[in-house]
Image (cartoon, rainbow over all chains, first blue to last red; front, side, top):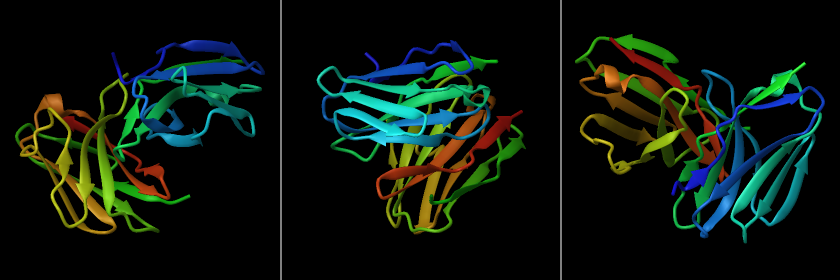
Length: 111
Length: 113
């Protein structure tokens, strides 16, 4: 079992819709969870991080964490074509400083 | 946010030669930096953790004699790919943390011909 799993996609949504990206992780000792956006040929850029169970909102983005289910998600409201990218879920395990990345979900927002 | 600068952004080299990639934290000090490798359509895989003033810690399966890491100052870590081969062609990315947030360099696209 991979440590951090994501559906590779592509996930296609129309402009203005809500895009829902999901991620599961295997290590119950994980304590920090991050969502990165990566455009083709570029390095990742941080969108959000979440540490506690529940929802965290920042503008059009909402991160949701459920530690009991070992599940973290990212919702993008009012999706725009410029949101088209690969979204990487990353998890930091309590015992190390290492970030473990999922394989990423490719999001396509069409006009 | 903090800035991490990586250089060069792309490099083409001949098989058998060595390539050095620099990673600098521009506005903060980083005792630890991380080096990742990303193959096309795959995720970032951690190669090694670079520690200022001490030896790097390599992930399982990463050859430390092939991927030399030097972290001589609090703002600079270098990765040298020695005797590069076509299979080393990849996107190499460094990161440094500030207040638990990871900041990434721009990445280096290495092509070995």
